[in-house]
Length: 521
Image 1: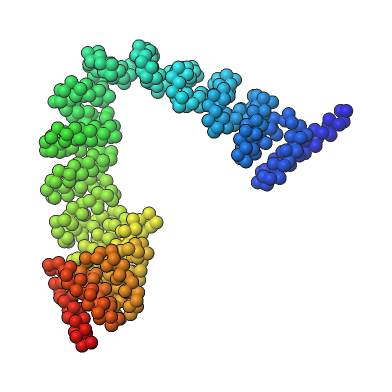
Image 2: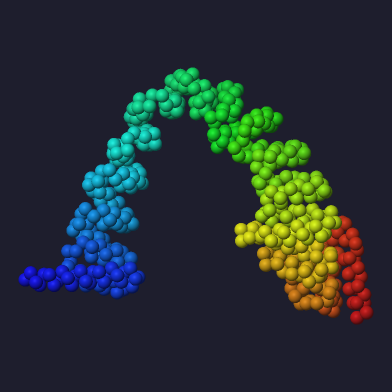
């Protein structure tokens, strides 16, 4: 008999090891069959029940999988992995009660494993089971000691249960444990304020500020108190103190300014006073350019003179010279005034600081082209093209190649013109200006007229009332000797012609040539 048991155990061990090996080799079908054979040899082996449970869960036979997993935990109740997997499976099935029982059993067996308590806390939060949330927080506190985050959550839960006295006791116990932490005193003042106990709140804030006159948290709470009382001047005075307080962190300072500006605007506030606040803050050492950016954006919103807005963006760049957005904003602001050598110099400075931003090269190339510096423009645009990546805005990439093609054409470099236009259309197949220009230059050469017609037709489909595009299409039809069709489109071009649009008389000339052909015919 003993010999028979030993043989059976050896068989089981052999097949189990082979099943695990097949599973590691990702031969799952073979592994599954071997685990099933192991189960026939020893149905009370916890590891086999666990393995089969996992297989059935993958096969989406959940009820069978749970049965095997549950059996595995019954056979080996101290195995944390088995119990955790069973609990996770219950959660997946939305069987919250069963999952909770498993996690509670794990906590009971290992009370120092606070990760189980955190999982229970998450479950009780989803169920809005406030008493169990509190008891779980108490158990976490027992293991990890009293912390601010746990105490604050206990306060919040007690407040939701309308247990204000209990919430007060939680905070008071934390204050008693840390009597010299003034921020906890500020929390107490805020609690008084939320309870409508304004006299106690004011006394608490005053007491903190007597101990620490530059306590930013107390200043902000007192500012909120004054605002709630309608004492706006006192609140604004405190705002200045907070903004220049070295203990106020950058994010808080930024949030405060943003909130104050919005509040000032809602009250029809004086924009000059707002700018004075910005300037007062910007006189301090700046960790980031965020406040300067906010000031510049505010000045644009309030339509300040262009020179003042440009100076504001220059102030941003003094703090953060590699801020590409600020560089673009400054260039665009200058662009509205005059596209001259000053714009070119600003663009050149921008690409020195940020050599991997294609948009800056586009503006530089365009400014140089407008100022008849074609060779410089080609060089700048090619540098911009070389800096294009998968993350580059496709419209900017298309604009670079479209402009490059236009300049090549001006320089008589026709083949390079077409290569540039082709590249433009890769990034934006619907770039109508490129489609029109490409089509027109092909027609002027008298080559690929069918291709030119297709591109031109796409342009007039996109902008049916554009006289220039209609003229291009008419001209391509003329080149194909389709004079009557050309006549229809050139007439449409003339009808849609805006004042000054045909300054060189090109459209009128095309119309005359088309009409002559029709008369001869």
